[in-house]
Amino acid sequence: MKKKIIYIDMDGVISDFSKAKSEHLLSKQSPYKGRPDRIPNIYRDLEPIKDAIESVNKIINNESFELFFLSTPPWDNPDAWMHKRIWIEKYFGKKARHKLILSARKDLNIGDFLIDDSKYRGQPNFQGEWLEFGSERFPNWEAVLSYLKID
Image (cartoon, rainbow, N blue to C red; front, side, top):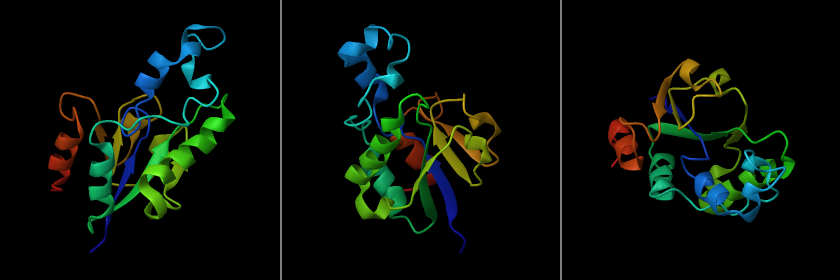
């Protein structure tokens, strides 16, 4: 049986960037006001989204799927690239080794499912099925797992 490929976005899907940017002291100051993604080290210690770690582990451990993390780091914050990789390892360990893809064009990846909360990096043109995390249809991880038929 061929495994279905699932891509999972990071910020807003498994890591809580919204909370970090609203709580960070520099987010309301120049040059970061309106661009909190440029704040040094902001990606280093993001908190996980509710139920994300457990849900992603269920997908990783499911024989029907092959999972990849697909994230777009800000070009103007090079340490974010490294911090995203470290964050994935912190929460998913060795089973996430070589499973992180960084790209500004998510529609260029070939797969069956893309779980993502944004529509600004090619998600609507993804050739598989885009599960818009946080939408009415997929408001949380429980809804995503139910749709994928994962207990």
